[in-house]
Amino acid sequence: MCKNATATAASLLEAIEPTIQSILTLTGQSSTTAGLAAIAAYNAALIALENWKSGTAAQTVLELVGAIQTALNAVFTSVTVSPAIQTLLNVIFAGIEAVIGVITANSPAPAAPAGSTASADDLQALHQADVAVNTQAKVQSLVPGFKRSIWHSPESQYKTAWNNAVDAGGFPYTLKV
Image (tube, rainbow, N blue to C red; front, side):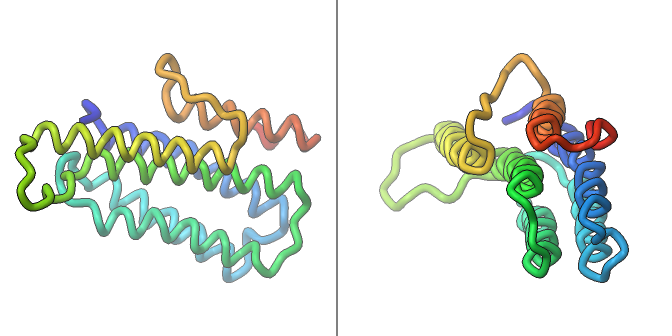
């Protein structure tokens, strides 16, 4: 398990907040009912995540983090977005997927299949490896070309992906984090 999964996931989620605010402001959705609901979903998820303990069940936290995606989808299903804005949204969604991956990988592994002789430690390690591979695939599908680094923190990697998308989309420098 990650030595401090709660702090890792929370710092990544905290890095996502200004980008959510930026995209809502950029698209004029920050004061709409749907935009305010997205911010409320974010705030609820952050509080739940900060109270979660690595190694314990995280269903409630996972549901609340997933609710951010649902709320953002609700905002942008009624708004036509340019490909450049969709790229920014994809970075946000990839960041949220990474948070979900950290939480899931650091939650207890599913029960062993009947007749399994694998130890609890082996099951947890297999669970973590499976979650890491699946999370990486989801992130790659949202942000093609993203390369995970063991040398940089998740929030640093998120900020780099966001800033690269801001540059590629020709957005104002003020959107950078």
